[in-house]
Length: 347
Image (cartoon, rainbow, N blue to C red):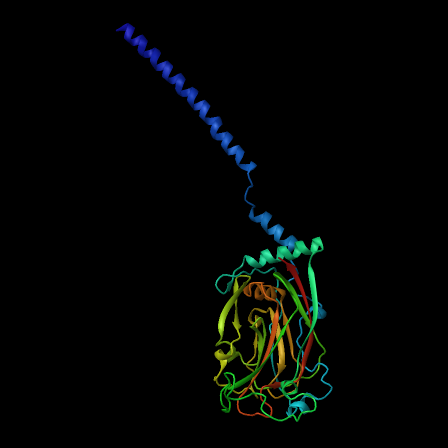
């Protein structure tokens, strides 16, 4: 019995020693694995990420009026637009003033939705290109002539139907309905893939006139129109800025064709992209009136529109005027001319 008891004690001591040894050996292994984690690329903390974003961010909205984007009419037409269009001078104008946006924005593209991540990527690319001296700039003059001058050039009688009712998807004449349109498109000479960083338009503040409804677009995304009601019937995409969504509409003639015009001659029904969030401001006269036109857009809206377009095609402006039943003045506008400057990054 004594011999068995001694052996039991010995075996118990031996087992305890082995257990302690294994415990001491396993601890350094786990500790060593933990210590090796920082040698890999560690996730950036929220604080570091925010600091980095601040380092590369642009001003949210230019404070200098010269940095604003303007689209104006009149150009160098050399005459009173009212005489060109046989329209009377008059007071009253529709306007939208959205104020200005603040803080860095965030935009991206996924099935017609500009999500908050892509704009940060574009802003970083633009900032890095600017620091490296590789940021590209294009300046070009854009002009949309009076459609009547296009259809009936110098030396020809300024008579006839500009709207071309009943042709090319235009409908027959019907009072106070969108029945026909005249479209002009202007492609900028920007080749290859690119990312838009900013865009400014400058023009001479001169009077312009149009009749009846106009749609002004960039890559067919409507920037401005005197008919919010019909614009909002178009296909919708979304740009997200500061956690809020901006609805943008893609121009399509069949999407507005045949819709009632509303009281556009006496009541403003203006659409100015992103004005509801204070990221744009617009103004223009009522239909058949004479006045100045201007549109000012936050650069985040420009970046978002570029992303929605895939940044794969040259920027293209389109100016559309519509008519209901008056061949002598419908589908017309006085000449519109402006200089556009685009900052971009080649991809």
